[in-house]
Length: 620
Image (cartoon, rainbow, N blue to C red):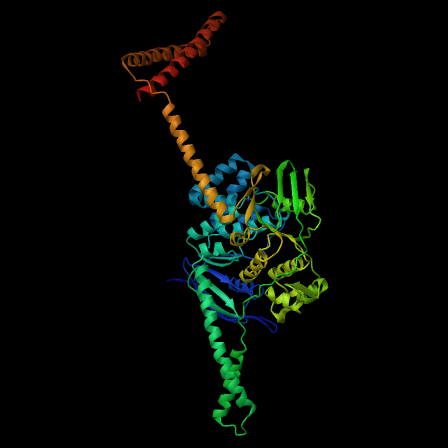
């Protein structure tokens, strides 16, 4: 296999905080590799180092000669005054500039510029590449090329950065969380696109379905080291469990040996022979191995929720529009106790608006919502809570509560709660300013969960979360003794949790589907198939009902021959009249008379030509 990228013994620290050490792996031609690690352990830092935006403490990065790299950063850089077309075609290669000039000509509507740019496109054979660009932009819902970047929302900027990364004609594509801010239809398209493209891919993602379909190898950074798994996500789960089982056995053996060696060390012989010195050095190695902690089993906690009465939430005929766009149309629903419902729909279809109406942050245009007297909302929004950067993480939790009630008559300390949500004890006193984006969101989610809600409303809770955190959150929500309403583009997450869906369609219609996302996709696929079969059948029936083609017989042939003769004579007469009209020799009365004849002949010719065409088709 051809190596495109070789990573050897890469290490990186910030002060005393070691992110990773001796990371080693290879990316081959056309290979698709995923990078997995907990938030805060250096995934984005590693990608920045590989792409040349950061430097390692030690190690070596080798790209194959003349390899072009395209990189989607977690926080992409934009020149805010630029418009979309400037950012898309930021590449300096000749074809990109030719396509940019062609698109600018179309925006201006200048026919001369369009003609000139089209000729350039022909010479450069750039039409196929331009078609690919238009497809990518269309699928990511980017249409107004002249729009300034500073006017875009955060999600629109993220999609623009992804489009620009895909459009670059790169040999190696590096993507940091490419599915963030994409709706389910976009994710479905992107996974098919990446799977089919002949490109080497290195990707950080938490979307387990996406990872499973697109990638064929996985590199995990765990305990600051790298581990390679030659398979998809399901393979990784199995082999990782086997690795941990083996490590646990080795640690137990080291513990037993450690106890014996510790006893020897305490009796420390006075004579320091070479053999004794070797044994002392070996003791510290055994001690280090014996103290390794790989316990990832999370206790099943049952955080106490406020009591939920019989009446939960009743929605009566609500509607909502913004700028003449109908987002919600005459929707009604009565929530039962402990329902877990997902919300799906394209970006901009009104999912967040729907949640804000339910929580009372936005009023509907019509309709009413009646909340049960015992309902306590816990609302996780996309914007998130703004923390004081100078506060320590554990103080953020303690400000809400020193202890979190769990189970029957038991409590969990703030530190234990942080550990449950994958914050190592050594990080508890870290300042908020030092946390990664994913860690901040995880901390924000904790502040929502620990306020004793009985109706959780989660708007894209999986963005920027690592896979380990998602597993913890899924387990927590499965055991949550209340209602859950979730907007998420993570299909795996949705499938594990929800019992039914609210599907938002064009025109603001919302219908309740009794099943999870996988069930809905299967249903839609079957429905689309039935529609196609019905359309095919209707077409066949229509074809059968078409009148039979009339036979071209002797009479039709005679008429056809006569028409050809008559049309020839009429065209000759018409031509002679045109000569007379243009001669300038006709007096006024003659001019009027011959003009009337010309008009009459023209009508006769038109009528006879139509009949000739009918007979010609019949003859064929």
